[in-house]
Length: 467
Image (cartoon, rainbow, N blue to C red):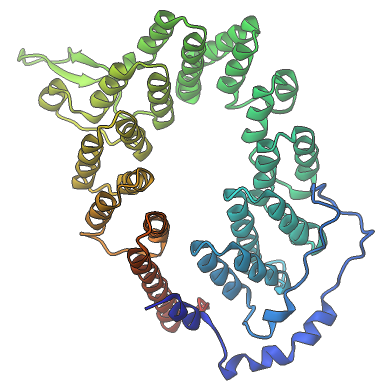
């Protein structure tokens, strides 16, 4: 089977769509094209020399452009990494007009189509194309603003270092969009650029204490950082549950700062203070007089804190301490297994960090051991990290072995296409084109199964899932 099967399975030439083709010209007449001099609400930094995006007239007569169909088609093409075609089909979403103010389903599907394609372009760092699509949807065609899309633009501008443009866009977005887009990328970009006071005036408040403590420490304003830390500490005494994570991440900021300053012992003091709550303590509430039991001081670890701590320890050469913390949190220490009697589930990223460290030190068998252990516990996400790293090391035999293990007890589904593509790219890079083609066929099979399930769901429910 080849990708031709997939293309034929997704094409539409049946008579049921002929009426839509005949009405295309009428829709074009009713679809206004704003004049070039129109005032656009969003200051998107598009290239003025680029030709404006238009409706793809060459495909509109061949495709059912109901918004649910457009969205489904865009999802398929994005998952197949065909972003050019996905962007072309996504532009058809502007033809869908909600039937009423209460027609939230249509509006939601239009919004999802927009942020799917803009997010995909952002993910591939095709920023200029993301800007053009944003301009097309929200400026030219007056689609209702979408929080996700605005966040992607802010993040893209921040990554490009175009901070003044990002600030202008952020300020102009909120009044029109009636929401607050994710501004963490812009805030951290300003902090990294040394524009701490400017970031403080724009974003300080709520859960941003750790970020600004890190920023003030990095740029030498120790007094300001200490002041914020004391404020947070006092708030923790009054509202311990509300600020516990912020307090931990602020301790992490001090720990990292000390490492960067070469003050390793002081950094480790911050580390020991931070992880003390994860250590075991004796249970003194034993009224029976039996031997004392041990239990963890805290049962639910905060994954963001733990992951950041592990990354900092590994970055600054404290590998023994990192593995010790990881083993303790996994419940692999004897005292935790035998006396605490509990194993706490960690965030998948925690395991993936340590799998990556195994590759850095050449302990690939240990990485496989971690992955298999998690799989035995019913967690299969680490396989993707492991396979990806094996492909990167050009170890395609081992990669395929672990890939087969990954799907030995479960059926590959549509959202697994990404790991299949990684295998295709790995085999192609190694010059094993027959193997690459074999995985291309797997992708086609998964996609066709997905389409057939959508069709079956539509026949059972009457809902429009047809691609």
